[in-house]
Length: 231
Image 1 (spheres, helix red, strand yellow):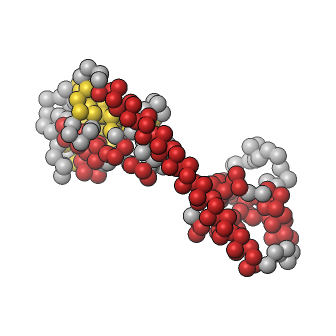
Image 2 (tube, rainbow, N blue to C red):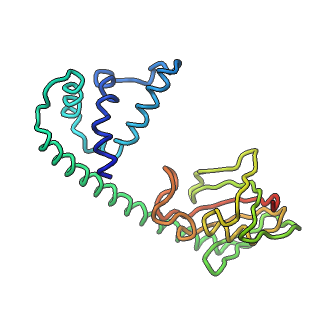
Image 3 (cartoon, rainbow, N blue to C red):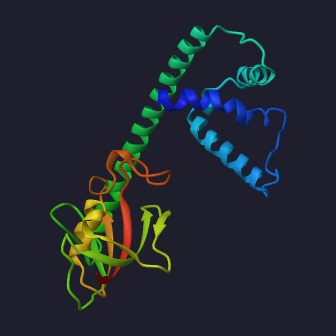
């Protein structure tokens, strides 16, 4: 965290100098290559410093930007700034860890309740690993092996219904063993032409690390999968 945050804070002088005197940038033109590239640079830097947003003193932040852009001598010695940046990074990192642990505990509790309720539904089966599956439509083809490649249509969502991924019009082609373990296990239960609904506990999905901005730590996942063919 410290290695990512400190360079991002320094680079943010470029990002925020144009915004310091502007209350609303939502109408900024994004038409030319320069404008689009500038927006991309700003977006990237903003994403890097976003974890520190609640801890930044904006007045001091903007003063640093102004001094850098004007070429003024720094108001604080470099060694003192370095010490402060290190302490700041550790504080932000600790806060993020605590927030992630709290989110993980909340997701685990919600997932366990959802799994218990879903397991009681008619037609839902539970494997030894804890994977839950429901046959929506049974096919008549073969079942894939772990080493096979398959073509599937799928839609993935959180237990609150938030969709995080879908194959769309073009089927996804991938090896059975290239998915999270719960998904891979479920695929091997299917026959070509079938559609199943999986409910995957977090330990068979992405676990404490989560995945991307939508799948949080220890999230239980729901997939609807159609097995089109074994390649």
